[in-house]
Image (tube, rainbow, N blue to C red; front, top):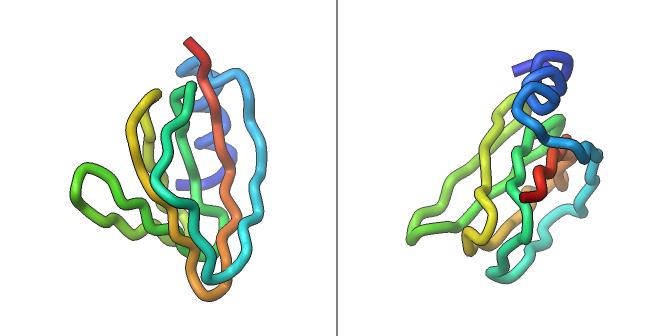
Length: 90
């Protein structure tokens, strides 16, 4: 998906906070959850999400949703990752 289309979908779906996050290579975040719905678009690099007993890999152009309260861990690839992130607070 391209960034323009992704941003338009965020606005349409009520994601009122949009930010770009750059995360360093070969690092991770331990299992946690957010107090908001998140929608992510990988602008560059690689992200692995571990949730629900499964690991999913997302690369440039891939997107995903992480619902409010969903426990997950994050791992960033050898080149790090740049994410366009939308947040929707309920």
